[in-house]
Length: 288
Figure (cartoon, rainbow, N blue to C red):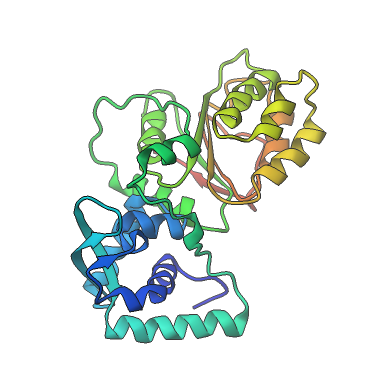
């Protein structure tokens, strides 16, 4: 273990809190794949990959269980004897070194209350995906980057027509526990275009203070930076700017946004190299 926990270690750390439920008839939603992905702030697809690895190494057991307030049985995951030993080691390591395990069960929203979930987490409409085949390596790479606490921006670069938008839309559709903002940049876009789009998004998600400021007609980047940092201090937002280099009028906006988006992740697609990020906060993909 280094200065931070790996995704597998985070999952073990999370499941270590639910050992007492392993013999219960009903189990909490938190030990399902969806619950684990939300608590660990990773996509459902990434959680599935890591759970499969942990199961193959004998650290977790998988079984069908009744979930509290659920109508059907679902796959639930618990630590094996070896997993509990591993979990105790990880817990002690976290305590001894004072590190953030990046696991928060309070973020878990049971899917049994779908109406409430949709009301509190509303994403932008995503581009439709008529068909999608292969590209498992690129998808896995993007999910890994999205789960990496050290990466802020994921940039997918490549010439027009090779499927950047479709790839990102596929990954975005697999994100769980996230409010996803999507904006396709046009050559005529200016900062106000994005501000208006963000205002609708934040209004839909109950961010009244920020939405009110954005719709005031007096928004300026300095004040907006402060408000964004306040609103996005907690994880749960992903911002996608498709064709980010299509307009020459957004440099100042993107420079502000990357420094003011708190713990949110940013995904950008572009044909060339954009100037509003550097190697310290970007995971760049040379091709898709």
